[in-house]
Image (cartoon, rainbow, N blue to C red; front, side, top):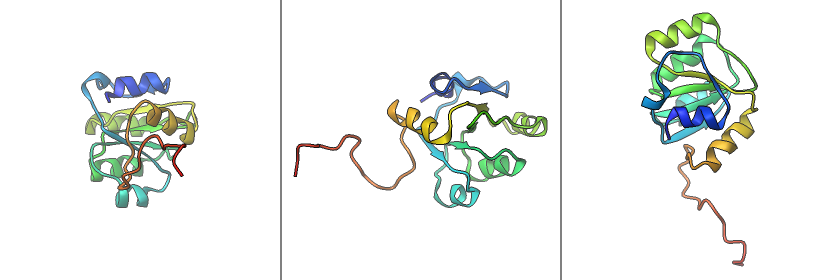
Length: 127
């Protein structure tokens, strides 16, 4: 899914000059624990978080994530925007809380980082 589509789905503002139509991701991760992001997130994933500090960008760079969506209307500092521009890391912000933002993206077909092979739709008729 292209980041431009994600921005539209989440009604998100972009803070970097990168063309979101040129950047694609196959999965997303929602977390406020950067240690979990380091331990459990695969590369080329979009991070959704409520944390707004430069350590988020260092984590994104270390894991080779595709970008960041700040939830709950949080916005990056100018220092973070400058670092993101230099490192070519897209930064966006949405008013949705993390649970709803992740749900919107999952419903639109964007996978998570789970290692579980769970069907998207459970058969409610089977016992």
